[in-house]
Image (cartoon, rainbow, N blue to C red; front, side, top):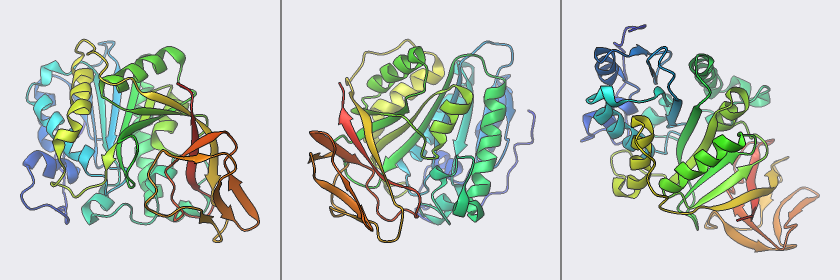
Length: 341
C-alpha cells in the first residue's frame, strides 16, 4: 500500500450503539480493514486524507469511479448503504472492476450527529468562498479537492462521481438527481441510464454550479457526476435500508462491472428555470416548511421576497426544489424547475 492504513478514530456520538461493524467503521472514517483486504488482493491502496480511500490497479485501463457520502453529516442512509456494499466487495476484492475513490465527506459533523459544524460543506467547492472561507468545512473541502484531483489526474476517459445524499424535506419524487448540464452527451446518456437502473424518479439538469462537490468533479475533471438524493435524513443505524435496494444494486453492479440491468424507472427530466438567491436577512419564502420538493406553483405566484425584490414564477408552471430560507446570505435558497421530458 502507498500509505499505512492504521488510523486513530473518534467514536460516533449519535447512534453508535448496536451499529454493524462495517457501518461503525465507515462512519468513523476508518478504512483500515477494507484497505488491507484490497491491498491483499493486489490493488494499490492509499488513504489520501481522513475519510478517503483510493483503490486502483495501475495500467489496467479501467473506469474511474468516485463515490461520496456524508457531505452533510445528518444524511446517514447512504453511509449505511455504502458501508455494507464496500464491506462485501472488499471480501470479494478481485471483483472490483473500476478504480475507486471513496470519500466520507463531513467526518466531524457525522461524529457530532449534525448537518455541518460551521457551514454547508456542499457550498465550498468554488474558487471564491467569501464569508465561508473561515469555516471548518473550508479546510475539509480543500482536502477533498486535493484527493479528487489526484485521483482523476491519473484516470482514463471514463470518469464517474456519484455523490449520495438524502433530503431534508419530503418530496413528490422520493429519489431524484441533479446532473450538471456540462457533462458530455455520451457520458450524460450513460449516467441517466444508470440513474434509471437505480430507480431514480426525477433528474434536474443544472446549468451552473452552486459550489457542490459533484458539479466540481464534472467541471474540472470531466466526470459524469451527479448529486443523488435518496429519500429523507435519518439517524445512523435506524434507516430502513430496503428503501435503498435499487440504488445499492445499481452501484454494486457499476463497481463490479456487471452488465447493465433493465431500467426500473424512466426518470422525469427537468431543467432549472431560475435560482433563488438569498441576498439579505430580509429574505422570506412564500410557503412554509412543510412544502415538499417538486411542489408545483402557477405562473406569477410569489416564491420569495428579499427586501424590495420579489421572486415570482415565470413559466406556466414551475416546481420548487431545495427551498431553504435558512441558508447564509449570498447562497442559493432554492431552485425552480420546469419539466422537459
